Image (cartoon, rainbow, N blue to C red; front, side, top):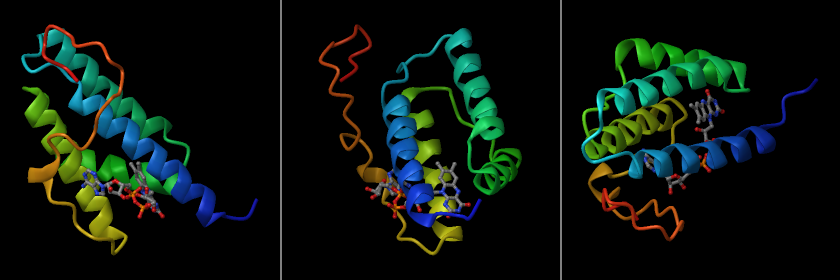
Length: 117
Ligand code: FAD
């Protein structure tokens, strides 16, 4: 089947939104199990992401820059950094990761005991 850049970009936008929102809700003080869950998720994501070329590049990125999971800040910062590496490769604008704080709001309403939004 022919490549469809519009659909590929749409999937990318939806996926980044999900990944950044997930990182923004990661526990401030993760347990060892929380950390393993996120690391495992990201590695399986690199295996299963439906755009094969994208996934292959992402696996190379993971090999060079392992996911940071020691805190919510570390996870959100790493995700922003990883997205910027993809932006760079695709000649897109670089996002200022200092502004990531309130950018990704789950909208879920539940104010968890971790202070999640
Ligand atoms: P996107 O890059 O999708 O970003 C969406 C929004 O997120 C932006 O408008 C901005 O508000 C915000 N944002 C931008 N940078 C950051 C950041 N660093 N941190 C937080 N928020 C940010 N497409 C390809 O053509 N080839 C590829 O090899 C490829 N690899 C990909 C790998 C992965 C893992 C993913 C998830 C997507 C990949 N894509 C790839 C898709 C590509 O990254 C874009 O999603 C797509 O091109 C649409 O781009 P966009 O300009 O709408 O913004």
